[in-house]
Length: 325
Length: 280
Image (cartoon, rainbow over all chains, first blue to last red; front, side, top):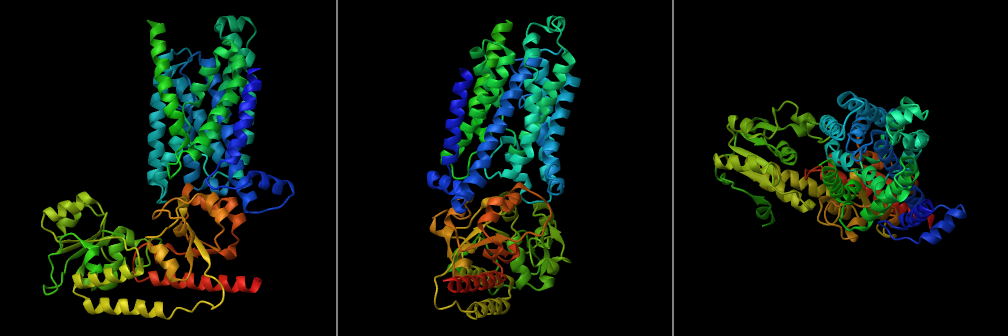
């Protein structure tokens, strides 16, 4: 039922996203033109500008929502989120290195792979810094350190680039945007994202068992190493390739699972698919909002998600403190 | 009168005073003006930017002149008797130089070709090169007067500039004046955008200007700003024959080379009108 509702909202937002843009055009007539196989400026706007950004909003949102839910389940830590623990930041660094060195111009696939490599390094670092039995706070602090370091290195790389535009583009990588992305970006990132989704979704039953504690999970026949590998690998694939084409869009993986967790009866496994759709809804809505809010130059998506997400994060921290004392 | 308006800051040197012999320029655009007008031995230093051939056609001329990075320390130790800068060049540095009693002459971004000519005259006077300034301006006016004329029939083609990051150029920019002088109608100007505002790609595509002006870029350093110009939608909507590649050095500053930009666009305008007439 919940999934049906979320899907309905997604479809609705999808249509709005196609209809809303900086230029006014008759969507209905243009769709008819596309169906008749004609090509005009309007069809180019629809298929080459609005379509890729709508698809990417859904793909990126789903990746972030899904990864957030999976990491929270695996680490049994309500604050775990790709952005907060530095996975997104390192993915951005990886993508930035590949893009501004010119490698992505020669081998386009290097862009998502760079993001994924960055994400993998972040997760490995996190485990090394915090250890596998780390408490809530340790993981977050290790994440903060990784995030700060990745942010500084990203800034350094952009400053060293000989392109006069590069240093201003730090805002894209740190706040994220889907403006004027193309179908090429969809084609580059979506296969790897889908593999990541499959890996994460396959851990649903294991995560459910894990919520009863590691010993119980093992006694239930859950292969803990496989779960860890699949959540981490899947997150790296999904978040790494998402960040490589959209920059860092923060807090989606934090807010969405938390809002939906009570609705699925606190089952980490059932939370996975709904968080994916929820993430798609949130990023789609935010991407529509940045086009509608008249700010001249378009707002970055991450600005909106942070405005919603940061107070939410503070609320969670306060609640955690109450629970701990 | 216009010339006087364009100059701000304290100019100690009067027309009768001896010409400055230790001139430093700390801004790309003033670099181009002093390189046009000053004697080589009047120049102590120009900014490092003008030595980059991707930024300026004066690079070869500037190669053997010591470069500066616009820092107060390096300027003061050179003991200049005139520093020229842009209106928005490092305000803190400029304030410090003025405090130390160094004459500073600042120039605004010119918004029209007429203002470019006025600035050349002002700079020439400041450098004690009035005759050379007059000759440069006369040459510019001569070349503008002898542009190939537009076909009598046909309407002026519409045009839009699309720069990295999707920036257009509206009324009140030198680009707009160059387009108008070349006999085109600037679409961004008609959309009443301000100066160099961002032109959404959707709007650009649906407006369908006859010609799209893009900045020719020879550098290989990748950026998202440049990647935007390779967007498949842009390639689908504008064929190569409707795209004019403008060398940025021609109009990024108000140097005499701005006439070259007008010439390039006039040729493109004529070609566009001829094609439209041929098709109809």
